[in-house]
Amino acid sequence: MNIRTHAHTKQQSGQEADAIAIPIAENDQFAYALSSNEAWAGYKNHQNPTFFPKLAAGQSPSILWLGCSDSRVPETTLLGLQPGDVFVHRNIANVISPTDINSSAVIEYAVAHLKVSHIVLCGHTCCGGAAAALGDSRVGGVLDTWLTPLKAIRRDHAEELAAIKDAGDRAIRLAELNVEKGVQNLLANYVVEEHIRTRNIKVHGVVYDIASGKIRDLRVGNASAMPGAGKEMAAPSKMEVLQGNHGVLIFKEGGSAMTVG
Image 1 (tube, one colour):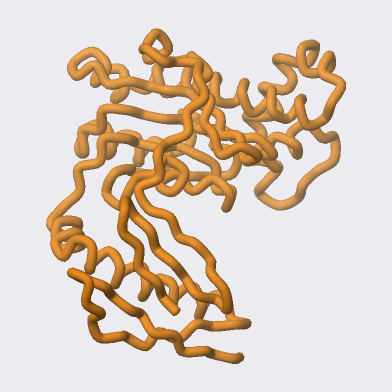
Image 2 (tube, rainbow, N blue to C red):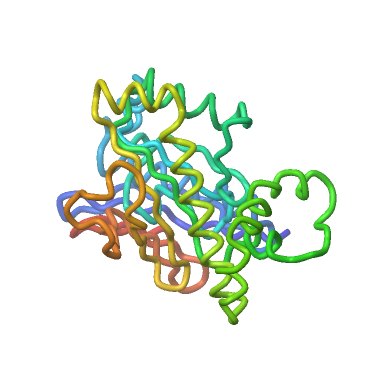
């Protein structure tokens, strides 16, 4: 494994601070990820020295995000938010079923204890789980069992789905139907139901378009009548991570930037 050492340079009031050497891995992705974390933590601490101490003191997220495990759909990044803003549960094909104790525990904790104001169930385009559920062959292992709810949705909407000739569009439609079913299950959850009644929390069903980076509100759930529902939304990014030349990382937030390189 080749490791290159770059200087982590901090600028403040027009003066250059001491450089911190950070190893950048050329071949080992995990080592590179650790290096990137070191750079990111240093950048955040430089921008706001109280950021991490405040996070350590506790969390009060306003959003519960229920999404897919797909590596291309990282909720905090695509929403342009920060650590501490979103409580998260992700699984294959963002399945929300009343029989799944894992997601049920997350929902109960987020709603009853963290007092989130919004529940967002997010499907996405290019979903491998949706594509697999549309196929007739077995995936193998526990995945076939896990995808049973999607296959049930496929059966319930067989005529509609069969009328869609393009396989990609058919998978997107199944992903939408899966979100709609998940939202129905959320609204029937006794904890969610109670907090809709007592705190007016909002349940949203959305689909993330991987090709554009935008979120589309499906106008399902109890928040479907809210202003702006049904429109595509591209959240303003609070921080950009740019890949410069020779493995240099550039962190940019607002009008300021810091280079690792």
